[in-house]
Length: 451
Image (cartoon, rainbow, N blue to C red; front, side, top):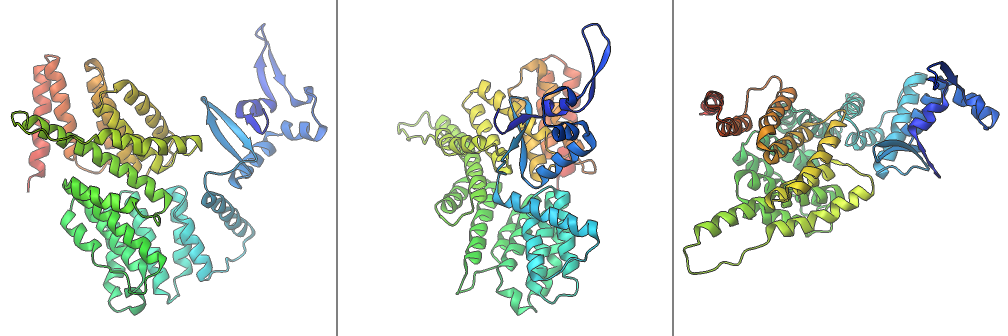
């Protein structure tokens, strides 16, 4: 078994009660096995063993993976990324400071470390790190670091689904930017404008998103960090054009980004997922055009958008899966592949992929707004390929999770679309009264959204 130990085997090493073949209760104890005396004593004390394992996992000395449905401890563990290993060490240092009562030696270096770490981990961990950074900067005059904290807070608020608060955070510091020479030429100003543009896009305010994204220009003597923001500008422009339905324009922007070697790996994966979704849309438009041009004598050569999309993302999915990484980028790639398989009418493969990604979403302890939308998208995909007898339950499941994720929000257009499918399903099943009720609900949602 080498450096791998199934979790259940280690748990069984701790004293536990069992029933024998006659139904008599007996206790299993590690002293009955041929191990070193100190190892036996350690295994006998679950209060020492389990916290020690948790500590080793937190320091990335060992890890835990799932193979064939079995949780396994891996010794000599290499974490998914260097950043996660450093984050584990930072959390350990912060915990030591907290438990010993020592005061953290705050300074610009410490704040920059906290800011870098706030890009990883759960939303709760990110919030704690940003709160510490904000406290450390309370009396500082470093406006660029203050702006970086606001930028990270705006991203975190958006990930939590609080778009309005994210907008307010950004607007507060943008209103000061004209009076701050150090901020006007800093790349973080570009990040703030792009974060605000993303907020506008979430609210379908695409014209405002375009205008906001273009408010920052890189300085003449630009740095690599400035160029990173420029590529983020191109990416945001592509996403905005995609949201408006200008798919060919969005395609140009995404392909331009992918052509550069300066793009971060995580962003490259997300870019490919976006481009694959775009190819699915372009394939549908091409299909509609070819049908409408059937009567024409000229033959237009069709582009294999779906095949191109699959060739682009499948190697990425296999690479990430081989590394055991189920990152946000991996999840986005899986969603894109599901859409491709549905459009190729490979519903068997689509069903397997949907089961896989729903399993991943079910294990997320603190999904952000991106994963919530992805989860709803996966549930809708399942409903689209389900047999008629199960279809309404699957569509209702999507509605249920939408209400769970957005308990205080009114029903949106997506809900209207779901009810329209339920209306059609009930009509096919000859439930005419139920079909009419679903249709009336669709009209209530649409009329409530009219300007």
